[in-house]
Amino acid sequence: MAEVILKNICKSYDNGFNAVKNVNINIEDKEFVVLVGPSGCGKSTTLRMIAGLEDISDGELYIGDKLVNDIDPKDRDIAMVFQNYALYPHLSVYDNMAFALKLRKMPKDEINKKVKEAAKILDLDHLLDRKPKALSGGQRQRVALGRAIVRNPKVFLMDEPLSNLDAKLRTAMRTEITKLHKSLGTTFIYVTHDQVEAMTMADRIVVMKDGIVQQIDTPQDIYDSPNNMFVAGFIGAPQMNFIDVKLVEKDGEIYAQNDALSIKLNAGDCGALTSNGYIGKEVVLGIRPEDIHIEDIFVDNSLDSTFEANVELGELMGAEIYAYLKAGNHNITARFDGRYKLNIGDKLKLAMDKHRIHIFDKETQLAIR
Ligand code: ATP
Image (cartoon, rainbow, N blue to C red; front, side, top):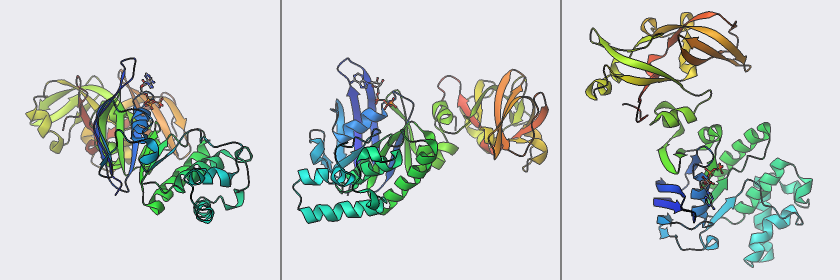
């Protein structure tokens, strides 16, 4: 079993800076967990503490059922893959992959078997004699993965392993790593600042900010039900619109209103708003660009969630077009089918998908549910 448990883990650097604050994560055996967040949020520090490359200031770290706070990195049964691959330039692909096994004094034929197996999984069989400088970025990254695979670790740790690759290769390697996880059946812990990597690869995502875990959930739940405005804005591109509104009660219904909008909220979403005393208060309405539709082609009953907005800019992305809009004083971004022709200055009649509206407390920025 290779579950990894972080219990109240903290990291204070020598200069007194608290980079990781009271982090609790239970990573299950064979799970693929992605730590994601903006630069400086503490995700690499957290991974380095799991690897044993950084001391844990406070808290307990378990790998399997063993407390490993004071266990050497080499005895933790983990393998780490770094952003810069960290290959030995003077060694062939074969010797790079065999290096750790030779250090362990493993018999030669066993080393040979393990390297060949890993090379086959990673499609490196024909490159085993090459030096790293004669490889493409993607191939180098595969060698770095191969070096980790041969060690047969309980846990794979990866720190931004794809960030030196171009966009096309990144997408291809993303799929490779996901497949690798499935075929190896090992616990993976992966750090990235890229929300697309997090969404596409993870069984569960840990979103971090300022050393604090903001939410731990499946990609779908993070996207559908973000805990707060930070998570809502970090996951999804273009990012969720945040619109200041006031909640008003009229004839037993609740409306989100401002100078440009009057949106009747879904009855099912209103219980928490009423019981927590938000009626008559200013709140933030969150709506993703993909949940704003051109009204006359919107399928659901949209009569009470329509609003008008002027097109300020259209950005054609191919399959879709990003529309940068203005409704009163509010900037709103929407995402339409790319076949829709937008002209600057057009006045559009739009509708929000009411089932996809989020309401946040203006001060705490927490989702009101
Ligand atoms: P990035 O994506 O930029 O790598 P990150 O989320 O991985 O960011 P960390 O590398 O974990 O961030 O760093 C977290 C915070 O700790 C940052 O503010 C960083 O400046 C700080 N930090 C990292 N190493 C040290 C150190 N040795 N001494 C003091 N502060 C440090």
